[in-house]
Length: 119
Image 1 (spheres, one colour):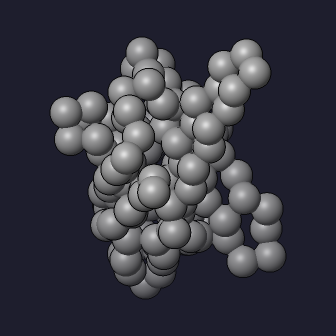
Image 2 (cartoon, helix red, strand yellow):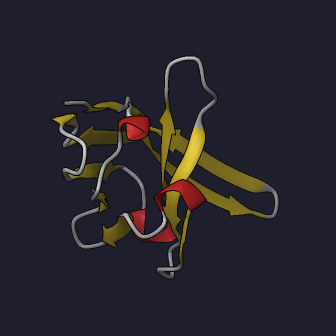
């Protein structure tokens, strides 16, 4: 079965950095749009960043200039480099793989990793 396994979360002080990784298995990784989402307590899940199969990226306004999404198709892995972290970045971060075609859609989620920004 398809697996998306996130790693790299943890506790960091404001202004610090973290790098999240999401390793995918049992999918043709290079064909998928990969995204990072987050959900804070009491809030809806939101898209943080996404990268298409061709390498195009988009970011939530709240993270532009601080976060960078990248992918390594040889390693079936997507990354989220998070710099200048703020307390409001605290959330569970989840990896998503999506492939949408006419008449077909495949969508998978990882289990999530906790990111806590606090002094």
